[in-house]
Image (cartoon, rainbow, N blue to C red; front, side, top):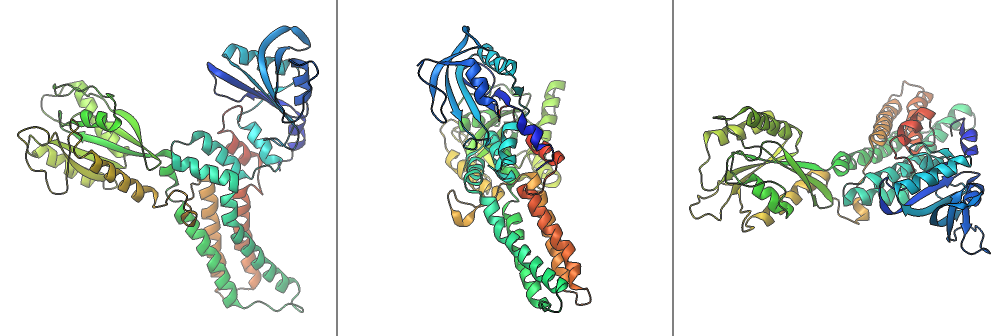
Length: 469
């Protein structure tokens, strides 16, 4: 724990714990040694015989400090006694009416009684510092708040409630400590403890390295699970991009007209597929002739969207043949954006005069729904390829969704274990040379789990939280 924890715990903090703005209910949270005392200054129970009691809700009124006639709101009060609270401290929560004016008045009344406005993430930071959560669990709180899809939510919930990451690393930590004990004993007590066999040490180090490597590999898709994937719809004007966009979203989000060039800018909405948010991007039609300045800017933004995408659907109307422009656009995709998955869509097949679709293209109609199930299957396969094959609820195929900080710590541990195995493999090196990479590996895991932290690191982690969490 940081050195200034004592002074931190002496303060009582307050903040709005629900999103700002108008709502049915807003929650103001107090945490710290004076939380209950402040609540007693502000709260009068409806039942005169009632008193604040841990984990028992009370209905009553909030008023100005020590002025029962100067009412602020009717509230429900939930008191928690240390250490049985989220932060591990005395906590009081006021459930108020969700008026910003009322909630601001409640927070100000608490401040007038001696509370300090909470910093971003300070409630969760106190929970970590009191040992209620490890650092990865604290980060999972933020992941739950920010979760954009079901997979992110499931991974964050699993780690928050079951310490899945700590559990996965437990055997690695134990293995490293066991190696450390063998080396230390033989170096410090050479007359009593024989030097362990190099072959056995190499095998142990290799097994630990394989465990960490597997964990790194299973978390390589974390970015996509966190942030989702982007699919761009592109093609010539009137190829049916906006119609398909609306059909997949089941709402008229994009304007559709018979006029070419209706879409002048990119338009995007999110579709959930296999628990992953898919951002669909409708774009300006591609053409070179007779385009005005605004349409040219729209086309430029189309290619900018492609550069940021993970997949592109190239749409061509089935009433027309593939043109030189279509072929050139497809070739540009292959040459300039090889990292982007590509799929051709043969659109508007509900029309009378249509031509057979090219090999491998999906025939679609936004009007009749033809081809939409195939498109959804394509999206599911695309998600599986990008974010991994992990099935929901399959404990044997746990998918790790790690933060960048956690991935960096794991990579450092992986590199240290490679150096450790190399040190064991060189008979000319004294055995105690291995203690450096061994210590580095342990330190990286301690940093990942929050066992070895600095003020700067904690500030970096918790500053990402909203105020009140």
